[in-house]
Image 1: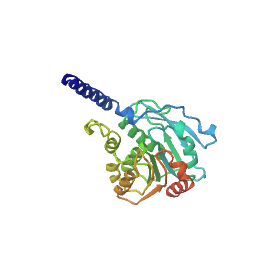
Image 2: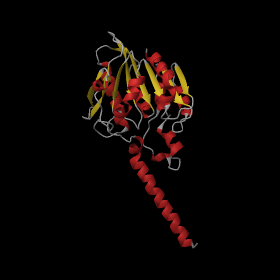
Image 3: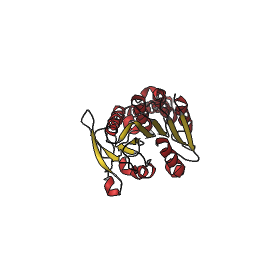
Image 4: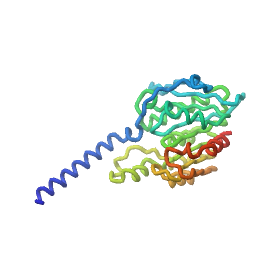
Length: 272
């Protein structure tokens, strides 16, 4: 092989790597927030006590979601905010919410900007704006006790849930499969790219240090996407009371199926 050919191969490889690295820098929000679209069904048509809601962000973006009343009527009751993972939306996960919601609590869930039936484009700032708007909407609901407001987040949703718990009055925080930060995830899954290309923070480890309410963490022991060690680190960083529940044999997307009734019971007890 001639020296010129070797040089061309090296230059070609360097240019190819530079192009891929540039695309990773440019498209990282699309990779982190795929923004799956789906219609949001009417909960009444599914036999659920509640209604479709619309929230409007400061920039005019409309968010579509659900408000579900408690299954057990009461004059005053807890409220639960539900923030799902990056590959989900309300149109696909509503059966999970139906089956796992604590019966004594009202539930509010909205599709993030660019997700489900919501408008706009998904950004890190946008999902946090959605979290703040959801909190305000739930606390404004008649009957919801502001002293008993809980926040639940799964995977990407743990970032939003932790931020809400760090900045708003919250009775408890539930995290399912939390990762430590976007930087740690990039090191794990995209180690061939320089870390300085990363613009996203998504930093649970830093944010949870400002959360002083009780924290409940679920994590699958066989999670290959977000390893359980990350869940342990997030739990260990919480300054308040914390409980870590490991779901034996569960990966990233079958925690509900394998967690089953014990998962549902633990969630209901924590919120109640």
